Amino acid sequence: MKPFDTSMYFITDSTACGEDEFLRRVDAALQGGVSIVQIREKNKSTRAYIALAEKVHALTRRYRVPLIVDDRVDVALAVDAEGVHLGAEDMTVAAARRILGDEKIIGATAKTVPWARDAAAQGADYLGVGAIYPTTTKVKTVLTSVETLREICMAVDIPVNAIGGLNRQNIDVLAGIPIAGICVVSAIMKAEDPKTAAEELRARAKEVLFG
Image (tube, rainbow, N blue to C red; front, top):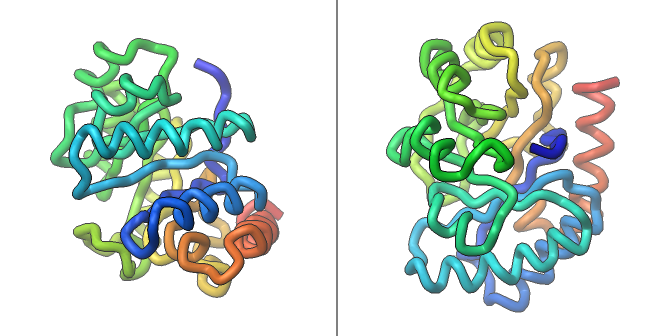
């Protein structure tokens, strides 16, 4: 597996705009320096999910940024994405690893230390932990304390990313916690200028988290 960088992990949301505008915003986020992109579609048919993922993958390849497919191992395989992200109700990490092999990136959601340790033991390459704050995305979320986030970081030896309602104004709460990066959706996807939003968030994260 090639090295990957989760410091600025961008998760897409196509629910608020048409396809052309959606792809324009993804392209702008890539111009702004996001380091990895996850396409997340909860309601599309398999065919529609694959069709959109192919278009997003064409963009991410142009910027040499990995594409991660949320939930769907079959869609990840169909578009030859660099990886997949799995939640509690998805395929297990171990099963996905048997299908995808060692060269693909497999991320997993974790909300407790035992959950995190189990995902890491099964072969997850990174973890997404949250939600740190309430989110505006149409995804079921349970809030995770900053203390739990810190405990998870200390319990596993794979990268841990914070997720959930994070933006340039509120990431100070993560200062001093050894996370690998932050995952953002609305802070970039719903910004008036996604490129500038990505640039400013990346600079702020570098200052707060890695400075």
